[in-house]
Length: 196
Ligand SMILES: [Fe+2]
Image (tube, rainbow, N blue to C red; front, top):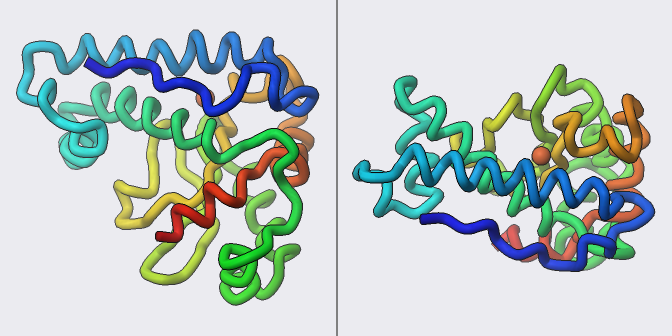
């Protein structure tokens, strides 16, 4: 049985960039629904005893388990997304993660352009990611519930670009949402910790 993980901050903490109204739907309804669906799908099956990551990796390679993969990956993606943000976050990173971004992208601005491009051009529902591939940072995008661990990549940071993530606050203006995430919300300490 999986449960909805606690938010790492109050649902009002990211205002005005992400409203409490958005959290009441995105966290309490959407994220909760993925948890509930996953529990129903794995009940009384061998997957009921597996960790979330094991369920994701098991179902990723089995087309008959698409529904399980979608819900398990969306549980994982949303928890990772909440931790990818913090109040008064964003801007250029310092420390180890800042140095690695400069080394692998050339500059913070080049990273920002690549991330904006990925997040705004993901057609339909999906996610924009900063990942480690081997020992190099890379920006990528995935559709629907797909995620880096299914592609031998390590997630460092993510942005949810499903419409449910921004429609209440930004309507159709996804680029404004992406800019607010980069300038005010990114939790670079979390990203640095994920470098391992
Ligand atoms: Fe979402």
